[in-house]
Image (cartoon, rainbow, N blue to C red; front, side):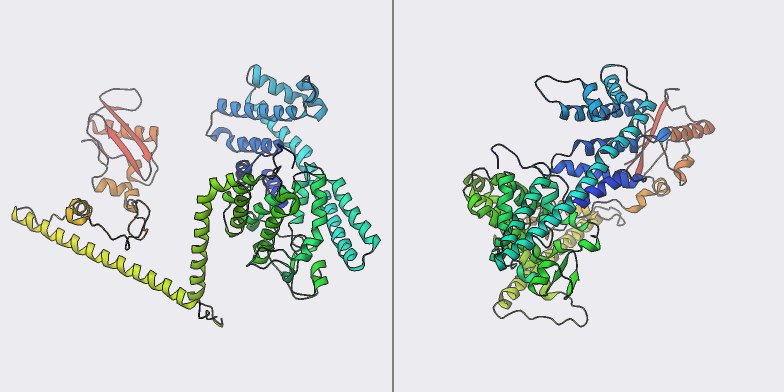
Length: 599
């Protein structure tokens, strides 16, 4: 990789994700548009988003807030948001086109880009002059979205579709020619191999290959064979020798043409291994490009022949697919031209693995740490934690698989004799832990009952009413404060749990009862009280929602009818000031001089 050059990556995991965002942003549905905006924001958290996509999302997001008379924003707030969007939109396009020692005029560059001249005037007015009107901004938003669609989205989609099809055909031609050259040692096959590589290099550039070439290479049928028997075993990270021989020449040629290709391929593999959510949301592929896993013969499997036994499925969730990609990443980091390279950014690889931890990326993380002592010193504790967590997760999965309820007709596989004692010992330890926790809870219940009876006896002796009962929460607090409630547990029996939870990791619920959402219940129980002589507003006693001024007006009318007092609803009179506000599940009301209190 060129010195000081950072790997270039697009924020979307697969091209279908980019196409979905394009459809969502221009879809005539506010829900779809909002989902598209959220996805663009997620892209921004991964890395740099193309300026055209960022501007499109900005205009769509403001249009979702600009709902006319019912907008939550004032007209001035909307004008300011539109102004910022237009300034960033025009400046972002113009700054990318600035070349040479002397800066060109914004109007001249905008004209060369095909940008309407009045966009530049709108941007200038919003920056240096009077803020344009809201109607002018709305017209500009509509034309800006149309310009972005015509000059970026449609052009990019057509370019990506055409180039993807051509690159896919060239990769298949390379695979066929390379296999033919290995079998027959034909000179024509050798020439076809080099021609396919040259065609791919001519079609792409340093800026476009990460978006087009890398996703194609990671599809089933290229770096990962169609036949499962040709992939890497899930228990190892060794690549089959034939698979390395098939693609090594191609990867070496791309590394020579585009310095840094190998590292970007490794990062693309990590992104696929850690992007399960994006894979699950992918739309179905076209029938012509349907990826098939087959157990047929070697040639049929490699060439995508579906005449044998086949099973169409989402190949990215296959264990053998993920194991083969992991083996490719390990191989590329250990291969001759990269093993001793000081330009390979092991820290970048490690950071990407840490952002998407799973068993596959953990193997790559360990290798990146072993290649760089500084990375190892920084991440050794994190690696040890993830390694231990992976072991525990694997053990837990095995136990669930062994004792899960099987469907009818399922033939259970009995574990081997050497694994059964370890599984049984783990279950016995878990059972003993549950027994210990139950015994501690029984002792706790006995302590609470004894304390409650003692308090009741003391109340009866002092002549207090027997109808008063001790609150369980107060008894719990008093018991905690008593010296006999604290115990020093043995370190062997101590089971850690998160702070604020009960033994066993149970988080208690502090939600108020559902009755507190009923205003009638609050008034009838005396929780919500009103000043003497002031009737409860009908809006509160009924099913209507109470808000500031409407509630104040109702309260004022009730006060005048009762003739009890003057109620201040915004500056008229100062005898009593009443306010109500809807907060959470109830209404909080207060009267400064009448003593109205709501807890």
